[in-house]
Image 1 (tube, one colour):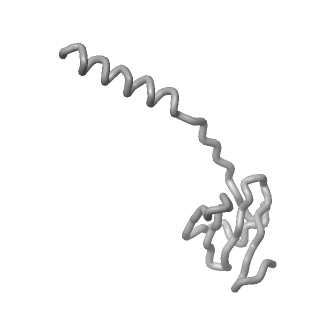
Image 2 (cartoon, one colour):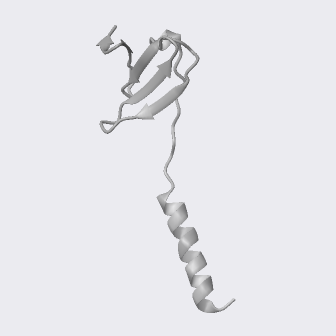
Image 3 (tube, rainbow, N blue to C red):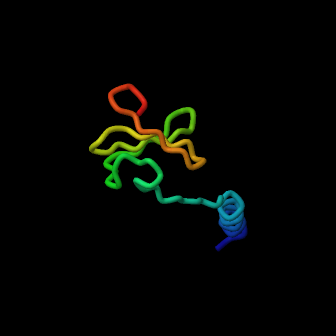
Length: 76
């Protein structure tokens, strides 16, 4: 390999390593006020809230441990 290709590969590896961020995952259950343990859809909105779709309706998660069940436009 010539020098320019080696430098490009090295720069790419360094950039990948420095950009990597820690991902944390927390399990949510009905004990956290999730309406059901079976989740069929997940979406993150523009404000950062995570929305979980279950058979019993939508659940909004704020990322700090608070789950708010929603049912047909109203919060329960």
